[in-house]
Length: 60
Image 1: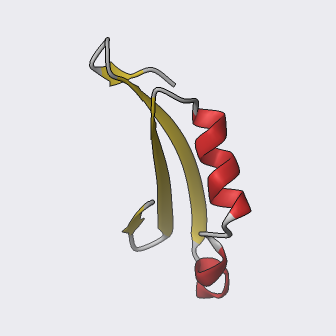
Image 2 (image 1 turned 90 degrees about the vertical axis):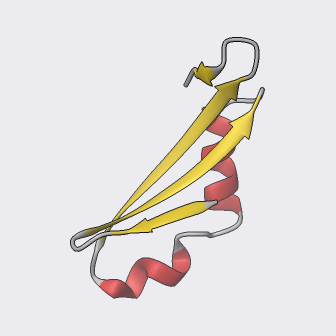
């Protein structure tokens, strides 16, 4: 998990290799990565992403 703290928002990313973005989102929710930021008063943006090794890029 990667967190980026900004003035108005917090961005949480979960990157997967050869899996799916949905699986990344499920992990963010399943492990409650966002919970420690809830009381901070900032907007929390959750993002799951998949990296396709063969294509060498993020596919979803």
